[in-house]
Figure 1 (tube, rainbow, N blue to C red):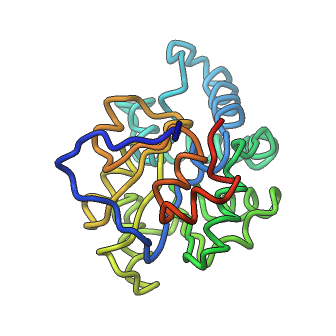
Figure 2 (cartoon, helix red, strand yellow; figure 1 turned 135 degrees about the horizontal axis):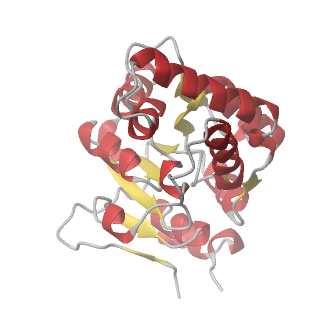
Length: 240
């Protein structure tokens, strides 16, 4: 049984061969929740803000969104300070409390073998994204890594994905975004490309309804992204 499915049959079919596959990072390539939640908890406890548990929902949103929720009455400067405290903890220790989801590396190997261009588009700060991908030996699989930067005027994932598509001259008709949260699916829709939900990540079934397809695991992702013959003959895409 292939662990992948199309949630709404009326939606456009996925391209038989993508012009590019654009991956989210946290919750799609790596299981970064322990490090993110751990640092958020330390920062909030230091501020004696202990009423926000559970913190899982803060894994994935852009920085501006989660700081606004945690400090609804705070000024821009206060929210920036909170973000800076979190990034300091993540820089020291949080980024290492991380792992690659089982099967993801095999999927990347298979897509590289088929000469499909791969990219990363993440709300994580650019330097953290590069550090994590280098740490796990994954950077070599991608032609470009697009992360957030504190100097950007907009921290929207919609805008970040738009910049990636524009700078890389990617054909939108056959490009695919792979992510686990609503921010990934919204970015794909706003930019006119299709999207696949990575159900092994941190999203919910209600969020997956925005996607064009759902892969229950990385093996299922291979079956969705590659022609049947290519995926079906490669052990990297066979689900037990």
